[in-house]
Image (cartoon, rainbow, N blue to C red; front, side):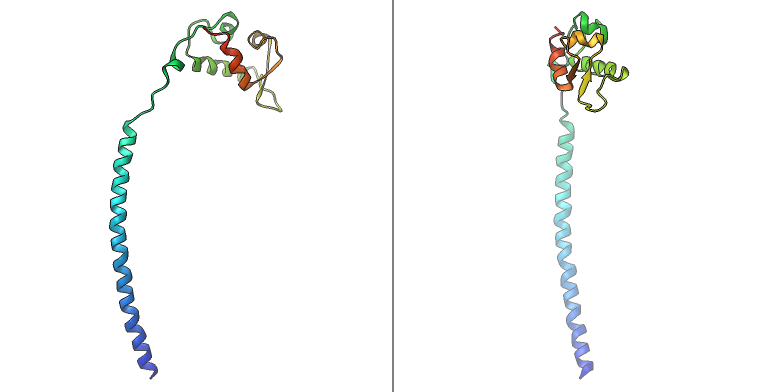
Length: 132
């Protein structure tokens, strides 16, 4: 009797495997279709590039105090900020303990309204008063 039980177990196991193999094929077909749709969507997204705001790219003239650091010719607001940060890092004016604070030297005190130390967020507000 033990032999018959083993044979029945083997016969029952075989049809289950066939059913399991058939199901993933249908799922694979759906996955292929979804991937194709995603590829089409990605192509559309790549075509639409982000354009910078023209107000950020508009050249602005710095006043005499700011011109001593960034130069006298008109620059976009983004370039003024980059040059100001380059000056701060070159002269090691960022506070050692609190990196958000900027220690003013003689040139920067004129821009910062005589303050010895200014936060980086306040700096952008103060610089805005020195550009036209």
